[in-house]
Figure 1: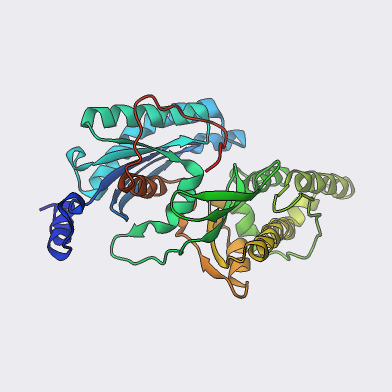
Figure 2 (figure 1 turned 60 degrees about the vertical axis):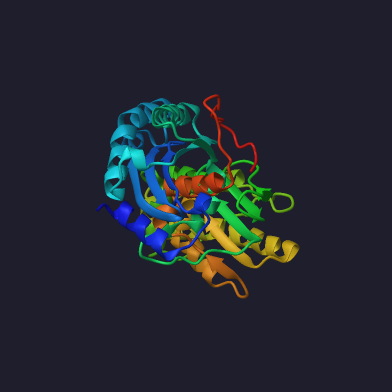
Amino acid sequence: MSILNQVKLNFELEINLPPVMSKPVVILGIESSCDETAAAVSYNDKILANVVATQKIHEAYGGVVPELASRAHQLHIVPVVDQALKQANISKKDIDAVAFTNGPGLMGALLVGASFSKSFALALNVPLIEINHMQAHVLAHFAQKEGTETRVPEFPFLCLTVSGGHTQIIVVKDHFHMEVIGQTQDDAAGEAFDKIGKLLHLPYPAGPVIDKLAESGNPLSYKFPHPHAPGLDFSFSGLKTAVMNFLNKEVQKDSHFIENNINNLCAAVQNTIVTILIKRLEQAVQQTGISQIAIAGGVSANSGLRKALKEQKGWTLFIPPFEYCTDNAAMVAITGYFRYKAGLFNDQNSSPFARFQGL
């Protein structure tokens, strides 16, 4: 007997539900919004498999090249889905619905995932479920790992979503009602890490490298400005410019300035970005009265941000596992599960969208 069939048998024996609710839901999640080709399988709120193929080709260009990303998705998507099904120990006939990222993201990359998902759902004659990438990052907090019990936030809660493309503070009222109360007006926090990393001659993606080098540096060694933005919004473009001007000035005096001070520079940059994020989050807590705080997105893996959040008094903090921080399909599958339960399905006429259109 497969793992899935055994779990289904246990579920049916232990829980007495009405007939319409007696069958657990198996979702295949597909993520292809940028440079990660991912597939996951969820069984209700449990993640049975979460497979990610990272596209290394972009490292040579210092950033994601959209055309190369879409081509790599075409190469990776079938093997990734096949591996996810094998890890979950299920067959295609066990799938109840296919959930896929419909945006925001790179249009060419999204089209690969959308086209595959539509074809796969049509062939299996199962429902198709569109997923908002940013909503999925938030709902990653509700994904449970098989054999473990993960704490989940209660509604309402605040979610600081920080990634390479977005920086937002969101009031999460329930699984489907979310309000963005603050967002970046220009560069996202992750984008700032990568752009400044390029100035420091670090490889792409620079965020994790800066995080590692910052461990051996003094965060107070250099002071960089906090760009102004109204209300609860963010701005990071000015920080990049300030760091660039500072480095140009110092390199003129010492051509080895960056390499001789790389740890301190990384620590100061990270401290500046983290401080900006925490200050805005503190304001959001004061304005909303909500002290349940969650973080999501790739930058939520940053050790400096996690440490600063844990030092806050009076907050109930929720931090997702590292594998659910960066782009992944587990967050797509779990969001698909909630939408399936609510009967929120889509048809074959759905179209991906590149820019953020709200939650």
